[in-house]
Amino acid sequence: MLTTASVDDRVIAALELGAVGFLFRDTEPEGLVNAVRLLASGTHVLFQGVADRVVSGFLAGRRHCDAAQAQRARLAVLTAREREVLALVGEGLSNPEICRMLLLSKATVKEHVSSILNKLGVANRLQAAVLVRTYADREVTCG
Image 1 (spheres, rainbow, N blue to C red):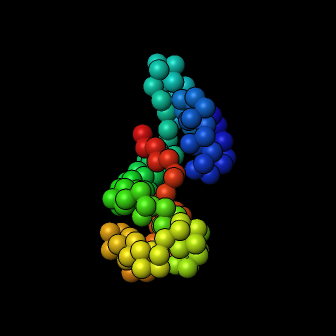
Image 2: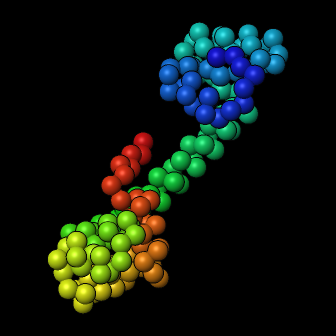
């Protein structure tokens, strides 16, 4: 693929669709000839600037994936009932609203919320809500 674009998403998309080389239009003729020879021999060709961006993007994605898996592991320590309560906290419900929804006493809901905050290592309901809204029920696939 020859392009003037330097958008990383286009490089990744092209590679995912089967491109085996990515060069810029301003590639010198000698570089273009060498790239064609390499491609003909079955080698993938990414010029240095492109390769640097692809590797950087891959590593950033890896870090994001690792963080997402770690956060999901934090959520996995909760009991089924705590996950129910946390889901409602994530929707912005108050303790009295959660009591009504789950038919629990105020003391029981308060205990569940305290346990959730402690197990997740967060300081307040808002942090717990952000955590569950960001990471719960989202598939984390890392290659």
